[in-house]
Each structure stands twice: as structure tokens, then as C-alpha cells.
Image (tube, rainbow, N blue to C red; front, side, top):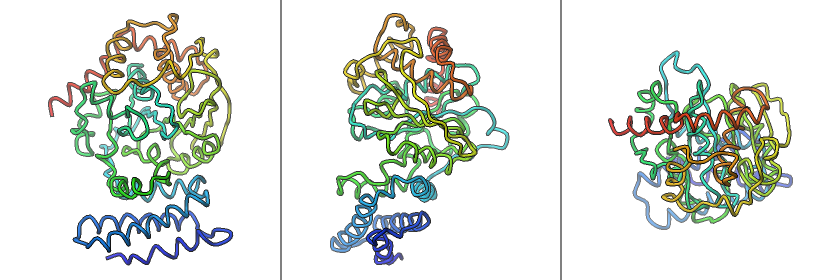
Length: 374
């Protein structure tokens, strides 16, 4: 049994001037938090004991947020590693780890409520020859449609996707979707305290860094804050040293590649070398679109637009459809990261080829059909 007071020394380190909490201290503290919550769930405790546990944990998480350490690379990385200890990770057979494996996901929290562009771009990218996209995402928390909400409306029964079934789905599918709650017991354990606190905590930024498949080696990760972005890129390199990552931030305050204005990209590779540059839609041969034209309409409407209009090839980039261009833009960035170049217009061409050849829709449908057989 974990002593509830074992977390207090770490809180005191956060309250010191200056704070003396180290990254390894944060790892240890999160491990204590998860053990306390695990015991709370499995054992019968009276209401007073439960309140005491939440007060101690809430005090630590609030103090951590006020120091700003939870937005520093080494701390983010250690927090992610601590949560991954409690995760149900996917183990692939030897030899299946080779090749390009992609993910595109944002932290959320930008408050913009835009269309599910990362999931859409993941599906489109999976129709490009040689690409396997293993999309990791959750359900809505700050928007009206999370990745998991739309993917369910597309017909994917992702309750069947877990660490035991993924190895069987791996070879035959170029698109896979992993719903985060089925893999991350640690994140499930902290869900109640996060809701009770009602403020952002370190757990808000961990999602994109705790992919259940360790073999993902190309990542486009969106963040809601310019200040967070370079630290997040460094954290990604620490957690996944064998991966290349684009961390993207749209200047309008978007955790995706923005359809209007500039987007800054922090590119980090396995060596930790950081390269920073800016892009905008004109570099892709696309017009700009206001965010109001790219709003989420809810899971059902988003899925209908994606499947019936976009993936069925009814739209073209020269028509200037806001959501379609938004999807092409994000797919092209994922393509260029994977190819190791900045040929943005070629990325658009490859995205359109994936759509109009029917490969993107075929990739999605194959995944749906495979799940139906389980």
C-alpha cells in the first residue's frame, strides 16, 4: 500500500524558491499518483480517505502547473514515460517493425473546434503507396467531435482494437485507429481528478507522446501554444529517439497546420537536432480559408462529409472547398516529413492521387471490414 504522504515531499520541492523538483522526481511523483488511484479504485475506502487522496494529488498537480515545469521538455518526457509504464503497449513480431509507420495527432486544447483534420489526413495518407498510418486518438474533450467520435461514425468498431488484436491487423492494413482509453490505464485513472480540478495539468499534453505502438517513426504533432512547441519537439525526441517529428502550431492558435496564415514547424530527428521553419497555404498552391469555414459540425456530419464528399472523390483542390483543402494541407505535411523533403505541392498531388484513385477510401473500408470479422 502506498502512503498518501509519500507525495508531499515532491509538492514541497515545487513550492521551494526556486523549485527543486527534477525530471526524475516528476516520474516518481506520477508513479505514486497512479498507484494511489489504482489502490483507491481496487480497495474499499470511505469518502474521507478518498477526499484526502484527491486533495494531496490535486495540490501536487496545481503546484506543478504554477511552476511551468510541466511544459519543459525533460519533464514532459518523464511524465510520458511514467504513464507508459501503465499502458497496454503493442508487441509486434520480429521483422514487422520495419518500414514507415506514421501518426498525426494534436494535443487539443486550442478551443477552435475545427473539423477532424488529423484523422482525415491519416486516412488519406494511408492510401499513398508505402505508407502505413497508425492513428492514435481519443474522444472529444474540448470540441464537439474527437477523433474517436468521428471514426465510430465512419463504421469502425474500435472497441475491438487492443494490444492483442493489433498484431493480427498489422500486416493487412495500411490504416489503423487506436482509441486511447483502451490502451492507457494511467490516463483512465487520472480522468476523475482532472475533471475535479478543472484546470489544465501535465496530463493534458501527454496524449500524442504515449502511442501504444513503439514502432511509429514519423509523427506530426500539433500543439496549442507557441511557447510549448519547441519543448514538445525536444520531449518527442527524448521519448522516441528513433523517430522524426514535426511539431506544428498555427499562428491563429491552432494545434494543426492552419488553413489560414502561417504555421510554424519544429522539426526534430533522432539526434535531437531542431530545425524551425514556417509554411503557409500558398506554398502548397492552395488558397487560404477562415477557420469559421473549417468548423466541426459534429461526429456524424463530419463523417458524412469525409466519406461521401472527400473520400468518394467528389471534390478537387482547384474548387477551393475549405475542409477539403484543409485535409490536403495536413496530409501533404505528413507526406513531406515521411519523404524527408519540403516539396509541398508534390505532397498535395500525392494526397489527391490517394483520394481520386480510391486508395484512401479502400484503406479505410478494409480496416472496417477486418474489424467486422473479429
